[in-house]
Image 1 (cartoon, rainbow, N blue to C red):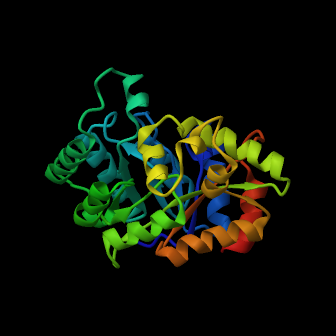
Image 2: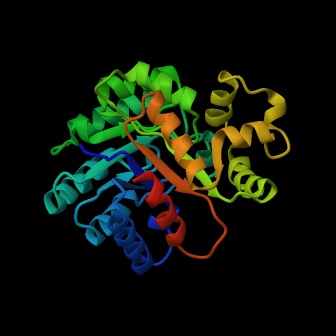
Length: 287
């Protein structure tokens, strides 16, 4: 499945009025991004969101980042994916993931249990569906070694979230040369360090108490002190690329040099509505 070198990961493709989401999708396709990603989080309507974005576009690949295995039943996802493929051809990439225990416990205590085994069971259910999503048309949001190996064995690759180029290098080694490694990279188009870090830290701090995230950062050399008070400058700067367009492009290139075949950029901002001008500015250096 063709993802292109660079895509956009955008909450604006999932939240808000449908007309606004359709307009944002059409604008991103016109700018030339290879794949449009949107979050799944703890919702149960990722396939309906995919329909909206696919209906609004003609050529671009559309991907879930992610469909949550705890809140979206595998049989329903498989059936909906088959309908999308019948309508739009092979333009839909199913990204599946385990989210975070704290968020799932907020929905139903005890829902989140043995996540690796649950992912294996979910893939088994997908494969047993009357019209199963092919392995080459799905990716797994993987951070740790076991989930990366599963991405190699049962999917077309992996979609790591809030990771660094060193993780991308390890992900490529884990999944092999012929699989997708499609990391998300948060960016802030702001050259003032204080303002840029304010925006970046406001984004990062919501993940500081989520073990799936912070355990990965600790594995890559960050310390407990880096996780305090909204995250150290060192941690924030490593996770979020901030500065001008060329600085962002350099971080994207770091992921590509580390083994990514696709990088999906998430523009962090504080403006109302879709950041169309920021997407345009990025397209001029990334595409």
